[in-house]
Amino acid sequence: MNVMYSSLFDAVFADSFFAPMRTVYVVSDSQLEEIKRTQREEELENIEASRKRLEESYQARVKILDDREHELQEEIKALAPAKKKNEKVAV
Image 1: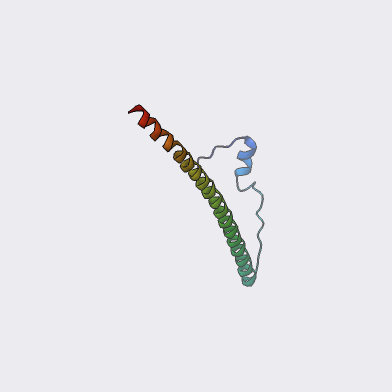
Image 2 (image 1 turned 90 degrees about the horizontal axis):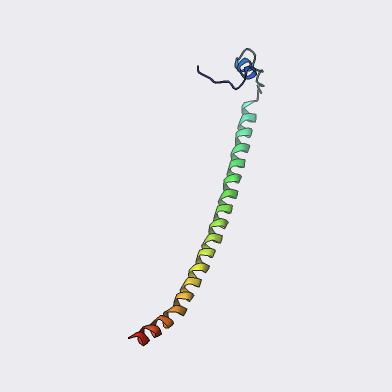
């Protein structure tokens, strides 16, 4: 295993003999199912909240684009008659 350690301290404690013991929890099947259900519910809530924020952001962006499109169309309308008048004078 080629592992680069940033310090001698890291190298010593990377060895499983010196590594701290991991905590192990023993739970019943019903407790495990409840934990899984709770995690799935939290994930679902996060997805729903994320979707809501995304949709709000999308709608805000669409409104900005619609407003700008309307402004440009009005500017084009305002410039079009002046352009036609100048063309008639030039001919």
